[in-house]
Length: 389
Image (tube, rainbow, N blue to C red):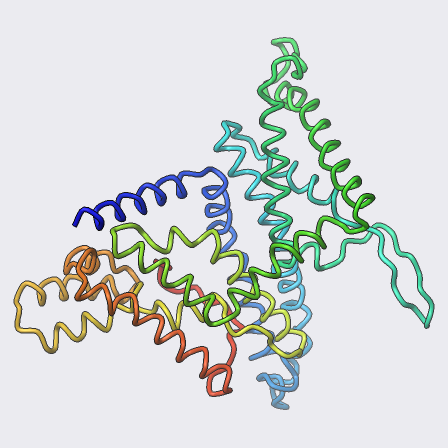
């Protein structure tokens, strides 16, 4: 018993520190805010392919062929949302981290975007008519979509931390007379810290490129993001992530909140890649996405407890459990299962905790193999459903 208590205390202490870490808080808040953008992009992909596509959509019928002329509308929406997710994430992380550090304005978000572009190559070589041409002042899609997500998060955090530290130095503030409006005075006060921050970040990117021959994007993507994507896109990787979430639930800690900073960037990135590939008529690459998690591994709440509630209502003879099931099944339909986790309880109850942990691992494995074998399709639309618990 002492060992169990010690384990629970250790995991609880770790969870508290992890969730209160300001970078984790900023990333979680940013991706929650970014979710409607992904849904808008998914909606445009859905309408584009099911309604406006002249080959496979309603526009393929002669009577509705005029709909194909409207496809540029959804293509524009798709481009503006899915291809600029990283820019939005950088901006929002900058704002959230600035607020955590005591700066309430939107400027830290704008500064984060500026610093990100400072370390991004804007000159590329392109093949035109069999000859290589150097094209300047362009931003490739890979630097604005989810492929640069981890670089964007890193630069947003680094630049805002530098800026906030400099902002706290009184000697770097330009003081204006009291007659100057507060917003103008605040702009001048931020001027020197902003100049120093952008210079430091741009110089860092330049020195890194000169020393290694690689841009920061290449280094971060190859060393950090790509290996993580490979892990999460593997069945053992996603099962491990789910196991960790379920383990935290069992000891009374919100498991999904613990893994969200890792899960959201990778799985939301995976579904946006799928949506873009589907929109362009290419092969859809990723099996494991955010909809895969929602449908196969957590439908009806973490641990798929909706099944437990139905079984209890049908089979159990214990009145107290039936009452809990009646109270919990309504919220369970909307993926809210705290009543059953803490009411049955599943928490610290080995008899219920073991299937609670194992069930999503089994259903996730079934979903993975069914998709890999072609019995189920890969997700290409992000649907806004009940809260992701």
